[in-house]
Length: 398
Image (spheres, one colour):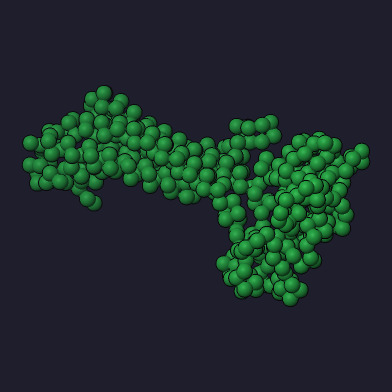
């Protein structure tokens, strides 16, 4: 066994004759444990919040979304539809028509997006389960399912036959419009359901049957705004993406869930990095106690170090003794902090002792990557602190 490591291990497990040094060592150890514990708990809590935030979009967004490269619409012919249906890696696809509209109900108006969907759409997303009032759309009917926020702005209830929901879409064209009515295409529909996913989606989309949307927008039967595609669990997204590009001769853009929510993912990743850096700074401050503890140990063991020097150890080997001692303190403190952190996270997962609402527990997620990040951070910074403090050996042996 390495002599320096053997002596460092003895120093680490033995008590000092000086009570003040023992207290400083305990404070340093508690600081490392608390740093590892807090960093792991915060990363696990943020991972849970991230998963909770993305769960709403994951329920709504498909695996892949095919969009036109230019313009608002593109055509899908019968041959392309047949190839999509027979593709081994495509579990389901849905045709979608989207356009900005003005909704009006009993003199109240609000802008929104109409989203015309076919009968396959509820199998692509979980939107049907998000309808908490009323029902989902029936095929080939003049019906609308509103977001919760849209229904509040319009004061529109389910199947309110006292008035119909009016939809206004600007007509394409150029030149001056003398009559406002000539500038819009209009249609009426009945509100049959209200859904709730999240605030952003609830105030954006009004769902309707795709035939009704095409009629309002005066589109042909093979024109769509997008194709929403769910792939088989074992399929390779990149392979399916290449097949879709080949099918449409690269006149389309294909986005996955991350690309569809690019700003959300960037925001969450930036916040995660910021939290990590802030708590790493806390750990760095706590490791100053480790530096102080090792320097005190160097001063206390000065006579022992001189004896070891006379017995044939070099200054570098004696320096490594205190370097290893600080490293052992960091590793031990990091492991104890991680064990406590894992137990704390597991207790929240199973017992839900911290609640956001009476029915919603604070979300946390136990991930191996967070354990690795915390351990590497603690040990890396701990060994750096040990190296800095072990330099005091050179001065003590002069």
